[in-house]
Length: 105
Length: 105
Ligand SMILES: [Zn+2]
Ligand SMILES: [Zn+2]
Ligand SMILES: [Zn+2]
Ligand SMILES: [Zn+2]
Image 1 (cartoon, chains in turn yellow, brown):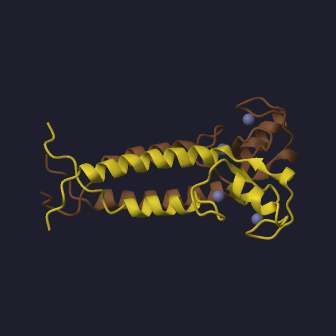
Image 2 (cartoon, chains in turn green, blue):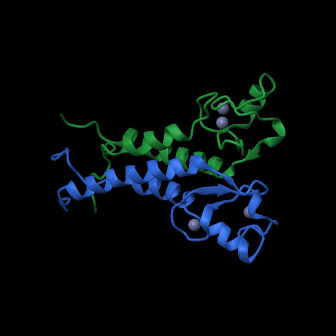
Image 3 (cartoon, each protein chain N blue to C red):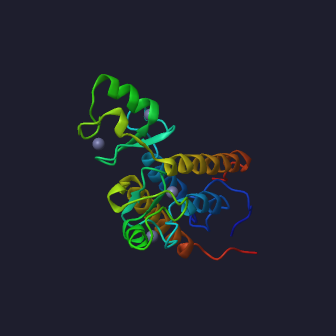
């Protein structure tokens, strides 16, 4: 059976990961969305806590400046699911890197 | 060990791709979201055309049956961006597979 299938990730990973990674981050804390909410007026999404904190200081979208009040915010649960899937896939990738023999030059 | 640097995608791709792929598909047409909209009441997302067609027949969310009218729908643009990024990354992966020499057994 397949002797040494474990190996370093192929060169396509950065492309796949980076593009999706960037989009799954909150524009306020730059971390992955945590309880994502969307502003229906402009379709920008943030972590629930991040945008609520921001709105208590200034009642507008931090990206496009449209007027927003806290009651406008709506959950965007698919983003939470995407962050979860993406992170568990990343964990698998990381494990694969750690398990891989160091590449011969 | 690695004789040739060009190679078929590593085993982690299916995990990364499949999980994200599933979530980026519309529950009505099962294709990738095309102009994604979210139902604010329940946070379920669909293609704009798919859900509008459905609502003309039955005014509820096809997944959770909450009452919905067309005017409730809101764009969920981040999903469109994710579909775009995901598809272009997939294209790069495909190219990599096509360019790779068939793996030695
Ligand atoms: Zn945040
Ligand atoms: Zn905005
Ligand atoms: Zn659809
Ligand atoms: Zn629903």
